[in-house]
Picture (cartoon, rainbow over the protein chains, first blue to last red):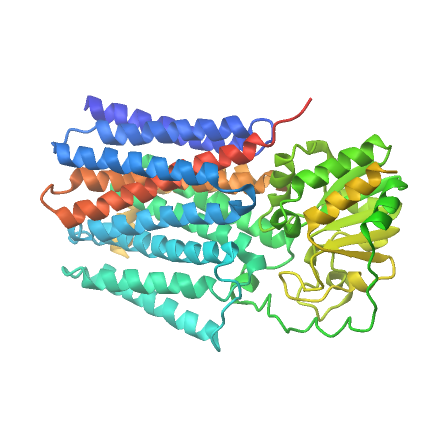
Length: 461
Length: 102
Protein backbone atom coordinates (compact mmCIF):
# COMPACT_ATOMS: atom_id res chain seq x y z
CA UNK A 1 0.00 0.00 0.00
CA UNK A 2 2.74 2.35 1.04
CA UNK A 3 4.86 1.73 -2.05
CA UNK A 4 1.78 2.15 -4.21
CA UNK A 5 1.10 5.52 -2.58
CA UNK A 6 4.66 6.69 -3.11
CA UNK A 7 4.57 5.51 -6.72
CA UNK A 8 1.37 7.43 -7.36
CA UNK A 9 2.84 10.50 -5.69
CA UNK A 10 5.89 10.28 -7.94
CA UNK A 11 3.68 10.00 -11.03
CA UNK A 12 1.60 12.94 -9.86
CA UNK A 13 4.70 15.08 -9.45
CA UNK A 14 5.92 13.95 -12.87
CA UNK A 15 2.62 14.88 -14.52
CA UNK A 16 2.74 18.32 -12.92
CA UNK A 17 6.35 18.88 -14.03
CA UNK A 18 5.36 17.97 -17.61
CA UNK A 19 2.65 20.61 -17.61
CA UNK A 20 4.70 23.28 -15.86
CA UNK A 21 7.73 22.48 -18.00
CA UNK A 22 5.75 22.74 -21.20
CA UNK A 23 4.25 26.04 -20.07
CA UNK A 24 7.69 27.43 -19.26
CA UNK A 25 9.02 26.25 -22.62
CA UNK A 26 6.60 28.74 -24.14
CA UNK A 27 8.53 31.81 -23.09
CA UNK A 28 12.17 32.59 -23.93
CA UNK A 29 13.01 33.63 -20.37
CA UNK A 30 11.86 30.47 -18.64
CA UNK A 31 12.26 27.92 -21.41
CA UNK A 32 15.51 26.37 -20.27
CA UNK A 33 14.37 25.97 -16.69
CA UNK A 34 11.11 24.47 -17.94
CA UNK A 35 12.97 21.83 -19.86
CA UNK A 36 15.01 20.92 -16.79
CA UNK A 37 11.90 20.71 -14.64
CA UNK A 38 10.24 18.31 -17.05
CA UNK A 39 13.46 16.28 -17.21
CA UNK A 40 13.51 16.08 -13.42
CA UNK A 41 9.92 14.82 -13.37
CA UNK A 42 10.79 12.22 -16.00
CA UNK A 43 13.77 10.98 -13.99
CA UNK A 44 11.62 10.74 -10.89
CA UNK A 45 8.92 8.77 -12.72
CA UNK A 46 11.49 6.36 -14.16
CA UNK A 47 13.20 5.70 -10.82
CA UNK A 48 9.84 5.27 -9.09
CA UNK A 49 8.76 2.73 -11.71
CA UNK A 50 11.90 0.69 -11.17
CA UNK A 51 11.90 0.68 -7.39
CA UNK A 52 8.39 1.24 -6.07
CA UNK A 53 6.57 -2.06 -6.52
CA UNK A 54 6.00 -5.27 -4.54
CA UNK A 55 6.95 -7.72 -7.25
CA UNK A 56 9.71 -10.28 -6.92
CA UNK A 57 12.15 -9.32 -9.63
CA UNK A 58 15.30 -11.27 -10.42
CA UNK A 59 18.71 -9.63 -10.34
CA UNK A 60 19.10 -10.45 -14.01
CA UNK A 61 16.11 -8.28 -14.90
CA UNK A 62 17.33 -5.41 -12.74
CA UNK A 63 20.78 -5.66 -14.26
CA UNK A 64 19.32 -5.61 -17.75
CA UNK A 65 17.16 -2.57 -16.98
CA UNK A 66 20.07 -0.60 -15.56
CA UNK A 67 22.38 -1.68 -18.38
CA UNK A 68 19.76 -0.59 -20.93
CA UNK A 69 19.28 2.79 -19.29
CA UNK A 70 23.03 3.37 -18.94
CA UNK A 71 23.60 2.34 -22.55
CA UNK A 72 20.73 4.49 -23.87
CA UNK A 73 21.84 7.48 -21.80
CA UNK A 74 25.41 7.27 -23.04
CA UNK A 75 24.40 7.05 -26.70
CA UNK A 76 21.58 9.57 -26.46
CA UNK A 77 23.75 12.08 -24.66
CA UNK A 78 26.63 11.58 -27.07
CA UNK A 79 24.48 12.06 -30.17
CA UNK A 80 22.64 15.05 -28.71
CA UNK A 81 25.85 16.83 -27.76
CA UNK A 82 27.88 15.96 -30.85
CA UNK A 83 25.48 16.68 -33.65
CA UNK A 84 25.82 20.10 -35.26
CA UNK A 85 23.01 22.56 -34.72
CA UNK A 86 22.15 22.56 -38.42
CA UNK A 87 21.23 18.87 -38.11
CA UNK A 88 18.74 19.47 -35.34
CA UNK A 89 15.49 18.89 -37.20
CA UNK A 90 16.54 15.41 -38.24
CA UNK A 91 17.77 14.75 -34.72
CA UNK A 92 14.36 15.50 -33.25
CA UNK A 93 12.89 13.19 -35.87
CA UNK A 94 15.35 10.45 -34.93
CA UNK A 95 14.58 10.62 -31.21
CA UNK A 96 10.89 10.72 -32.00
CA UNK A 97 11.27 7.51 -33.97
CA UNK A 98 12.95 5.88 -30.98
CA UNK A 99 9.93 6.67 -28.81
CA UNK A 100 7.62 5.23 -31.45
CA UNK A 101 9.69 2.05 -31.64
CA UNK A 102 9.52 1.69 -27.85
CA UNK A 103 5.72 1.89 -27.95
CA UNK A 104 5.60 -0.69 -30.73
CA UNK A 105 7.89 -3.13 -28.91
CA UNK A 106 5.80 -2.83 -25.74
CA UNK A 107 2.77 -3.90 -27.78
CA UNK A 108 4.61 -6.88 -29.26
CA UNK A 109 5.72 -8.08 -25.84
CA UNK A 110 2.49 -7.57 -23.93
CA UNK A 111 0.01 -8.96 -26.42
CA UNK A 112 -0.04 -12.53 -25.14
CA UNK A 113 -0.55 -11.47 -21.52
CA UNK A 114 -3.82 -9.73 -22.21
CA UNK A 115 -5.72 -11.87 -24.75
CA UNK A 116 -8.59 -12.25 -22.28
CA UNK A 117 -9.54 -8.56 -22.37
CA UNK A 118 -10.67 -6.90 -25.58
CA UNK A 119 -10.21 -3.47 -23.99
CA UNK A 120 -6.56 -4.11 -23.14
CA UNK A 121 -5.96 -5.67 -26.54
CA UNK A 122 -7.47 -2.61 -28.19
CA UNK A 123 -5.01 -0.40 -26.28
CA UNK A 124 -2.09 -2.67 -27.22
CA UNK A 125 -3.07 -2.75 -30.88
CA UNK A 126 -3.57 1.03 -31.02
CA UNK A 127 -0.21 1.71 -29.34
CA UNK A 128 1.58 -0.74 -31.61
CA UNK A 129 -0.07 0.63 -34.74
CA UNK A 130 0.64 4.28 -34.03
CA UNK A 131 4.08 3.64 -32.56
CA UNK A 132 5.16 1.66 -35.63
CA UNK A 133 3.93 4.30 -38.07
CA UNK A 134 5.69 6.96 -36.03
CA UNK A 135 8.91 4.93 -35.99
CA UNK A 136 9.20 4.11 -39.67
CA UNK A 137 7.83 7.51 -40.71
CA UNK A 138 10.33 9.33 -38.51
CA UNK A 139 13.20 7.28 -39.88
CA UNK A 140 12.23 8.22 -43.43
CA UNK A 141 11.90 11.89 -42.42
CA UNK A 142 15.31 11.64 -40.79
CA UNK A 143 16.83 10.13 -43.93
CA UNK A 144 15.23 12.81 -46.09
CA UNK A 145 16.49 15.72 -44.01
CA UNK A 146 19.85 14.06 -43.73
CA UNK A 147 20.14 14.07 -47.50
CA UNK A 148 20.32 10.27 -47.66
CA UNK A 149 17.00 10.27 -49.44
CA UNK A 150 16.68 13.49 -51.34
CA UNK A 151 13.86 13.28 -53.84
CA UNK A 152 10.26 12.66 -52.92
CA UNK A 153 9.59 9.22 -54.29
CA UNK A 154 6.17 8.77 -55.83
CA UNK A 155 4.72 5.61 -57.17
CA UNK A 156 1.99 6.16 -59.72
CA UNK A 157 -1.28 6.87 -57.91
CA UNK A 158 0.50 6.61 -54.57
CA UNK A 159 -2.54 8.07 -52.83
CA UNK A 160 -4.64 5.07 -53.80
CA UNK A 161 -1.91 2.62 -52.81
CA UNK A 162 -1.45 4.35 -49.45
CA UNK A 163 -5.14 4.32 -48.70
CA UNK A 164 -5.33 0.63 -49.56
CA UNK A 165 -2.42 -0.13 -47.22
CA UNK A 166 -3.98 2.00 -44.49
CA UNK A 167 -7.35 0.31 -44.84
CA UNK A 168 -5.76 -3.14 -44.80
CA UNK A 169 -3.82 -2.16 -41.66
CA UNK A 170 -6.93 -0.86 -39.92
CA UNK A 171 -8.96 -3.92 -40.97
CA UNK A 172 -6.33 -6.23 -39.52
CA UNK A 173 -6.25 -4.16 -36.33
CA UNK A 174 -10.01 -4.45 -35.92
CA UNK A 175 -9.84 -8.18 -36.66
CA UNK A 176 -7.25 -8.67 -33.91
CA UNK A 177 -9.22 -6.63 -31.39
CA UNK A 178 -12.44 -8.57 -32.05
CA UNK A 179 -11.03 -12.08 -32.31
CA UNK A 180 -8.02 -11.81 -30.00
CA UNK A 181 -6.23 -14.78 -31.62
CA UNK A 182 -3.85 -16.61 -29.28
CA UNK A 183 -1.15 -16.77 -31.90
CA UNK A 184 0.81 -13.53 -32.15
CA UNK A 185 1.33 -14.03 -35.90
CA UNK A 186 -1.48 -11.62 -36.74
CA UNK A 187 0.10 -9.01 -34.52
CA UNK A 188 3.43 -9.44 -36.30
CA UNK A 189 1.64 -8.95 -39.60
CA UNK A 190 0.05 -5.79 -38.21
CA UNK A 191 3.46 -4.58 -37.06
CA UNK A 192 4.88 -5.12 -40.57
CA UNK A 193 1.93 -3.44 -42.27
CA UNK A 194 2.09 -0.42 -39.96
CA UNK A 195 5.83 -0.05 -40.58
CA UNK A 196 5.16 -0.21 -44.31
CA UNK A 197 2.43 2.39 -44.04
CA UNK A 198 4.75 4.73 -42.11
CA UNK A 199 7.28 4.50 -44.94
CA UNK A 200 4.69 4.95 -47.68
CA UNK A 201 3.12 7.84 -45.81
CA UNK A 202 6.30 9.93 -45.62
CA UNK A 203 8.15 8.92 -48.79
CA UNK A 204 6.03 10.98 -51.23
CA UNK A 205 6.14 14.12 -49.08
CA UNK A 206 8.62 16.77 -50.18
CA UNK A 207 11.48 17.99 -48.02
CA UNK A 208 9.91 21.39 -47.50
CA UNK A 209 7.06 19.77 -45.63
CA UNK A 210 9.21 17.63 -43.34
CA UNK A 211 8.81 19.96 -40.32
CA UNK A 212 5.07 19.47 -40.48
CA UNK A 213 5.49 15.72 -40.82
CA UNK A 214 7.90 15.55 -37.88
CA UNK A 215 5.54 17.55 -35.72
CA UNK A 216 2.67 15.29 -36.72
CA UNK A 217 4.65 12.12 -35.97
CA UNK A 218 5.68 13.70 -32.69
CA UNK A 219 2.06 13.93 -31.64
CA UNK A 220 1.55 10.34 -32.89
CA UNK A 221 4.21 9.09 -30.51
CA UNK A 222 2.49 11.05 -27.75
CA UNK A 223 -0.73 9.20 -28.56
CA UNK A 224 1.06 5.86 -28.56
CA UNK A 225 2.41 6.64 -25.09
CA UNK A 226 -1.10 7.58 -23.96
CA UNK A 227 -2.44 4.19 -25.09
CA UNK A 228 0.33 2.64 -23.00
CA UNK A 229 -1.03 4.67 -20.10
CA UNK A 230 -4.46 3.10 -20.62
CA UNK A 231 -2.92 -0.36 -20.85
CA UNK A 232 -1.12 -0.07 -17.51
CA UNK A 233 -3.47 2.38 -15.80
CA UNK A 234 -0.37 4.53 -15.60
CA UNK A 235 -1.10 8.20 -15.01
CA UNK A 236 2.35 9.50 -15.89
CA UNK A 237 2.24 7.84 -19.32
CA UNK A 238 -1.33 8.94 -19.83
CA UNK A 239 -0.86 12.61 -18.93
CA UNK A 240 2.51 12.96 -20.68
CA UNK A 241 1.25 11.18 -23.77
CA UNK A 242 -2.03 13.05 -24.15
CA UNK A 243 -0.32 16.36 -23.42
CA UNK A 244 2.18 15.83 -26.23
CA UNK A 245 -0.47 14.41 -28.52
CA UNK A 246 -2.65 17.48 -28.14
CA UNK A 247 0.12 20.09 -28.05
CA UNK A 248 1.81 18.42 -31.02
CA UNK A 249 -1.39 18.55 -33.04
CA UNK A 250 -1.81 22.26 -32.33
CA UNK A 251 1.82 22.88 -33.24
CA UNK A 252 1.34 20.97 -36.49
CA UNK A 253 -1.68 23.07 -37.36
CA UNK A 254 0.19 26.28 -36.50
CA UNK A 255 2.95 25.24 -38.89
CA UNK A 256 0.63 24.42 -41.76
CA UNK A 257 -1.09 27.75 -41.18
CA UNK A 258 2.22 29.57 -41.44
CA UNK A 259 2.62 27.96 -44.85
CA UNK A 260 -0.99 28.68 -45.72
CA UNK A 261 -1.70 25.03 -46.39
CA UNK A 262 -3.91 22.45 -44.81
CA UNK A 263 -2.77 19.24 -43.24
CA UNK A 264 -4.53 17.12 -45.85
CA UNK A 265 -2.80 19.18 -48.49
CA UNK A 266 0.57 18.28 -46.97
CA UNK A 267 -0.25 14.59 -46.73
CA UNK A 268 -2.12 14.03 -49.97
CA UNK A 269 -1.10 17.11 -51.94
CA UNK A 270 1.49 17.41 -54.63
CA UNK A 271 3.70 20.11 -53.18
CA UNK A 272 7.31 19.91 -54.25
CA UNK A 273 6.29 18.35 -57.54
CA UNK A 274 9.36 19.36 -59.51
CA UNK A 275 8.26 20.30 -62.97
CA UNK A 276 4.93 21.52 -61.68
CA UNK A 277 3.05 24.54 -62.84
CA UNK A 278 5.23 27.43 -61.67
CA UNK A 279 7.93 26.62 -64.16
CA UNK A 280 8.64 28.38 -67.40
CA UNK A 281 7.01 31.56 -66.17
CA UNK A 282 10.18 33.41 -65.52
CA UNK A 283 12.45 32.50 -68.38
CA UNK A 284 11.97 35.97 -69.90
CA UNK A 285 14.06 38.07 -67.54
CA UNK A 286 17.78 38.40 -67.17
CA UNK A 287 19.78 37.82 -64.05
CA UNK A 288 22.15 40.48 -62.82
CA UNK A 289 25.13 39.32 -60.84
CA UNK A 290 27.24 41.37 -58.48
CA UNK A 291 30.71 40.99 -57.01
CA UNK A 292 31.53 41.14 -53.29
CA UNK A 293 33.07 44.61 -53.41
CA UNK A 294 30.01 46.19 -55.04
CA UNK A 295 27.81 44.41 -52.53
CA UNK A 296 30.01 45.80 -49.75
CA UNK A 297 29.61 49.34 -51.11
CA UNK A 298 25.83 48.98 -51.21
CA UNK A 299 25.73 47.72 -47.65
CA UNK A 300 28.24 50.20 -46.28
CA UNK A 301 26.34 53.24 -47.49
CA UNK A 302 22.87 51.99 -46.58
CA UNK A 303 20.87 53.25 -43.63
CA UNK A 304 18.66 50.24 -43.15
CA UNK A 305 19.67 46.69 -43.99
CA UNK A 306 17.51 43.61 -43.51
CA UNK A 307 19.04 40.15 -43.61
CA UNK A 308 16.78 37.28 -44.69
CA UNK A 309 18.31 33.99 -43.56
CA UNK A 310 17.25 30.65 -45.01
CA UNK A 311 18.30 27.04 -45.02
CA UNK A 312 21.30 27.90 -47.21
CA UNK A 313 22.71 29.84 -44.25
CA UNK A 314 22.51 26.72 -42.14
CA UNK A 315 24.05 24.52 -44.82
CA UNK A 316 26.96 26.90 -45.34
CA UNK A 317 27.39 27.26 -41.54
CA UNK A 318 27.47 31.00 -42.18
CA UNK A 319 25.69 32.07 -38.97
CA UNK A 320 28.88 33.35 -37.32
CA UNK A 321 30.01 35.15 -40.47
CA UNK A 322 26.67 36.88 -40.89
CA UNK A 323 26.76 37.98 -37.27
CA UNK A 324 30.23 39.43 -37.82
CA UNK A 325 28.99 41.33 -40.87
CA UNK A 326 26.00 42.59 -38.90
CA UNK A 327 28.21 43.90 -36.06
CA UNK A 328 30.61 45.48 -38.52
CA UNK A 329 27.81 47.30 -40.31
CA UNK A 330 26.27 48.38 -37.01
CA UNK A 331 29.60 49.85 -35.95
CA UNK A 332 29.48 51.92 -39.12
CA UNK A 333 26.07 53.26 -38.23
CA UNK A 334 23.97 50.97 -40.41
CA UNK A 335 20.76 49.73 -38.84
CA UNK A 336 20.67 45.94 -39.34
CA UNK A 337 17.80 43.55 -38.63
CA UNK A 338 16.98 39.95 -39.43
CA UNK A 339 13.65 39.05 -41.02
CA UNK A 340 12.47 35.68 -39.82
CA UNK A 341 9.90 33.87 -41.91
CA UNK A 342 7.94 31.37 -39.80
CA UNK A 343 8.97 28.45 -41.96
CA UNK A 344 12.48 29.55 -42.95
CA UNK A 345 14.87 26.66 -42.67
CA UNK A 346 13.62 23.18 -42.10
CA UNK A 347 11.66 23.83 -38.93
CA UNK A 348 9.81 26.79 -37.47
CA UNK A 349 12.26 28.66 -35.31
CA UNK A 350 15.21 26.93 -36.99
CA UNK A 351 16.76 30.27 -37.97
CA UNK A 352 16.29 31.71 -34.49
CA UNK A 353 18.14 28.81 -32.94
CA UNK A 354 20.89 29.03 -35.53
CA UNK A 355 21.39 32.78 -35.14
CA UNK A 356 21.18 32.52 -31.38
CA UNK A 357 24.05 30.06 -31.60
CA UNK A 358 26.11 32.81 -33.21
CA UNK A 359 25.13 35.18 -30.36
CA UNK A 360 22.89 37.36 -32.50
CA UNK A 361 20.84 39.62 -30.28
CA UNK A 362 17.35 38.27 -29.70
CA UNK A 363 15.86 41.74 -30.33
CA UNK A 364 17.34 41.91 -33.81
CA UNK A 365 15.21 39.00 -35.01
CA UNK A 366 11.95 40.37 -36.37
CA UNK A 367 8.92 38.24 -37.23
CA UNK A 368 7.41 38.37 -40.69
CA UNK A 369 4.32 40.37 -39.76
CA UNK A 370 6.40 43.05 -38.05
CA UNK A 371 9.10 43.37 -40.70
CA UNK A 372 6.92 43.33 -43.82
CA UNK A 373 5.73 46.98 -43.48
CA UNK A 374 9.35 48.05 -42.99
CA UNK A 375 10.70 46.80 -46.32
CA UNK A 376 9.61 50.01 -48.06
CA UNK A 377 12.15 51.93 -45.97
CA UNK A 378 14.87 49.36 -46.36
CA UNK A 379 17.85 50.21 -48.54
CA UNK A 380 19.34 46.76 -48.95
CA UNK A 381 17.91 43.33 -48.30
CA UNK A 382 20.49 40.59 -48.04
CA UNK A 383 18.91 37.22 -48.78
CA UNK A 384 21.19 34.48 -47.49
CA UNK A 385 20.22 31.07 -48.77
CA UNK A 386 16.49 31.68 -48.59
CA UNK A 387 14.32 31.10 -51.62
CA UNK A 388 10.68 30.06 -51.41
CA UNK A 389 9.93 32.41 -48.50
CA UNK A 390 10.79 35.42 -50.67
CA UNK A 391 9.23 34.17 -53.90
CA UNK A 392 6.73 36.77 -55.19
CA UNK A 393 4.91 34.00 -57.06
CA UNK A 394 3.20 33.30 -53.73
CA UNK A 395 1.44 36.64 -54.19
CA UNK A 396 1.24 37.05 -57.96
CA UNK A 397 0.89 33.68 -59.61
CA UNK A 398 -2.29 31.74 -58.82
CA UNK A 399 -0.96 28.72 -60.72
CA UNK A 400 2.09 28.46 -58.47
CA UNK A 401 2.07 25.64 -55.92
CA UNK A 402 3.05 28.08 -53.19
CA UNK A 403 0.38 30.64 -54.15
CA UNK A 404 -1.18 32.07 -51.01
CA UNK A 405 1.75 31.34 -48.70
CA UNK A 406 2.61 34.52 -46.79
CA UNK A 407 6.07 35.70 -47.81
CA UNK A 408 8.57 38.35 -46.89
CA UNK A 409 7.97 41.28 -49.25
CA UNK A 410 11.62 41.90 -50.00
CA UNK A 411 10.82 43.19 -53.49
CA UNK A 412 9.54 46.38 -51.85
CA UNK A 413 13.04 47.29 -50.71
CA UNK A 414 15.31 49.51 -52.79
CA UNK A 415 17.93 46.84 -53.46
CA UNK A 416 18.02 43.11 -53.02
CA UNK A 417 21.22 41.09 -52.90
CA UNK A 418 20.74 37.35 -53.07
CA UNK A 419 23.54 35.08 -51.89
CA UNK A 420 23.07 31.76 -53.58
CA UNK A 421 25.08 28.84 -54.79
CA UNK A 422 23.48 28.62 -58.22
CA UNK A 423 20.22 29.33 -60.00
CA UNK A 424 18.80 26.02 -58.81
CA UNK A 425 15.26 26.33 -57.47
CA UNK A 426 14.53 25.99 -53.77
CA UNK A 427 13.02 23.09 -51.91
CA UNK A 428 9.58 23.60 -53.35
CA UNK A 429 11.18 23.09 -56.75
CA UNK A 430 9.85 26.23 -58.38
CA UNK A 431 11.54 29.15 -60.07
CA UNK A 432 11.82 32.47 -58.28
CA UNK A 433 11.01 35.57 -60.29
CA UNK A 434 12.62 37.70 -57.60
CA UNK A 435 15.99 36.76 -59.09
CA UNK A 436 14.96 38.35 -62.39
CA UNK A 437 13.75 41.57 -60.75
CA UNK A 438 15.81 44.61 -61.90
CA UNK A 439 16.35 45.54 -58.23
CA UNK A 440 17.92 42.20 -57.54
CA UNK A 441 21.59 41.34 -57.81
CA UNK A 442 22.86 37.81 -57.39
CA UNK A 443 26.08 37.03 -55.59
CA UNK A 444 26.84 33.44 -56.53
CA UNK A 445 28.95 31.15 -54.38
CA UNK A 446 29.09 29.57 -50.97
CA UNK A 447 27.28 31.85 -48.52
CA UNK A 448 30.00 31.78 -45.86
CA UNK A 449 32.66 32.47 -48.45
CA UNK A 450 30.73 35.38 -49.97
CA UNK A 451 29.97 36.93 -46.58
CA UNK A 452 33.61 36.71 -45.54
CA UNK A 453 34.59 38.48 -48.75
CA UNK A 454 32.03 41.21 -48.13
CA UNK A 455 33.32 41.65 -44.57
CA UNK A 456 36.85 42.16 -45.83
CA UNK A 457 35.68 44.69 -48.39
CA UNK A 458 33.66 46.63 -45.82
CA UNK A 459 36.62 46.66 -43.44
CA UNK A 460 38.77 48.30 -46.11
CA UNK A 461 36.34 51.15 -46.60
CA UNK B 1 -23.02 -0.68 -27.16
CA UNK B 2 -23.05 -2.31 -23.77
CA UNK B 3 -19.34 -3.01 -24.00
CA UNK B 4 -18.74 0.60 -24.87
CA UNK B 5 -20.72 1.88 -21.88
CA UNK B 6 -18.91 -0.64 -19.71
CA UNK B 7 -15.64 0.81 -21.00
CA UNK B 8 -16.79 4.35 -20.13
CA UNK B 9 -17.81 3.19 -16.67
CA UNK B 10 -14.59 1.36 -15.96
CA UNK B 11 -12.36 4.18 -17.09
CA UNK B 12 -14.27 7.29 -16.33
CA UNK B 13 -11.45 9.00 -14.41
CA UNK B 14 -8.95 8.33 -17.15
CA UNK B 15 -11.33 9.64 -19.77
CA UNK B 16 -11.73 12.84 -17.78
CA UNK B 17 -7.95 13.14 -17.60
CA UNK B 18 -7.66 12.67 -21.36
CA UNK B 19 -10.23 15.37 -22.08
CA UNK B 20 -8.69 17.84 -19.63
CA UNK B 21 -5.16 17.13 -20.84
CA UNK B 22 -6.22 17.83 -24.42
CA UNK B 23 -7.37 21.28 -23.34
CA UNK B 24 -4.23 21.86 -21.30
CA UNK B 25 -2.10 20.93 -24.31
CA UNK B 26 -4.01 23.31 -26.59
CA UNK B 27 -3.87 26.10 -24.02
CA UNK B 28 -0.14 25.69 -23.41
CA UNK B 29 0.78 25.90 -27.06
CA UNK B 30 -1.62 28.50 -28.40
CA UNK B 31 0.24 31.65 -27.37
CA UNK B 32 3.79 30.64 -28.03
CA UNK B 33 5.92 32.81 -30.35
CA UNK B 34 7.12 31.04 -33.50
CA UNK B 35 10.68 31.52 -32.25
CA UNK B 36 10.14 28.82 -29.70
CA UNK B 37 8.33 26.30 -31.89
CA UNK B 38 11.40 24.20 -32.52
CA UNK B 39 12.53 23.98 -28.88
CA UNK B 40 8.94 23.34 -27.87
CA UNK B 41 8.56 20.54 -30.36
CA UNK B 42 11.84 19.12 -29.15
CA UNK B 43 10.72 19.43 -25.52
CA UNK B 44 7.42 17.73 -26.30
CA UNK B 45 9.42 15.07 -28.08
CA UNK B 46 11.37 14.42 -24.89
CA UNK B 47 8.20 14.29 -22.78
CA UNK B 48 6.59 11.53 -24.84
CA UNK B 49 9.67 9.56 -23.93
CA UNK B 50 7.58 8.76 -20.86
CA UNK B 51 6.69 5.68 -22.90
CA UNK B 52 9.90 4.24 -21.41
CA UNK B 53 7.90 3.55 -18.24
CA UNK B 54 5.93 1.01 -20.24
CA UNK B 55 9.14 -0.62 -21.39
CA UNK B 56 10.39 -0.84 -17.79
CA UNK B 57 7.07 -2.35 -16.66
CA UNK B 58 7.36 -4.95 -19.42
CA UNK B 59 10.78 -5.90 -18.11
CA UNK B 60 9.58 -6.09 -14.50
CA UNK B 61 6.71 -8.42 -15.45
CA UNK B 62 8.84 -10.56 -17.69
CA UNK B 63 9.52 -14.20 -16.95
CA UNK B 64 13.32 -14.25 -16.36
CA UNK B 65 13.53 -17.46 -18.41
CA UNK B 66 12.10 -15.81 -21.50
CA UNK B 67 15.35 -14.70 -23.08
CA UNK B 68 13.87 -13.52 -26.38
CA UNK B 69 11.39 -11.39 -24.45
CA UNK B 70 14.14 -9.99 -22.24
CA UNK B 71 16.21 -9.12 -25.28
CA UNK B 72 13.36 -7.23 -26.94
CA UNK B 73 12.49 -5.55 -23.65
CA UNK B 74 16.12 -4.54 -23.28
CA UNK B 75 16.04 -2.93 -26.72
CA UNK B 76 12.77 -1.17 -25.85
CA UNK B 77 14.31 0.33 -22.71
CA UNK B 78 17.42 1.43 -24.64
CA UNK B 79 15.32 3.12 -27.35
CA UNK B 80 13.06 4.74 -24.76
CA UNK B 81 16.10 6.09 -22.91
CA UNK B 82 17.45 7.46 -26.18
CA UNK B 83 14.19 9.33 -26.65
CA UNK B 84 14.20 10.75 -23.13
CA UNK B 85 17.87 11.63 -22.73
CA UNK B 86 18.47 12.72 -26.32
CA UNK B 87 15.26 14.74 -26.30
CA UNK B 88 15.99 16.68 -23.13
CA UNK B 89 19.68 17.23 -23.88
CA UNK B 90 19.02 18.49 -27.41
CA UNK B 91 16.30 20.83 -26.13
CA UNK B 92 18.67 22.16 -23.50
CA UNK B 93 21.33 22.70 -26.12
CA UNK B 94 18.92 24.68 -28.27
CA UNK B 95 17.76 26.79 -25.36
CA UNK B 96 21.27 27.43 -24.11
CA UNK B 97 21.65 29.63 -27.16
CA UNK B 98 18.75 31.82 -26.22
CA UNK B 99 20.59 33.33 -23.30
CA UNK B 100 20.03 37.06 -23.37
CA UNK B 101 23.15 39.11 -23.64
CA UNK B 102 23.19 42.16 -21.48
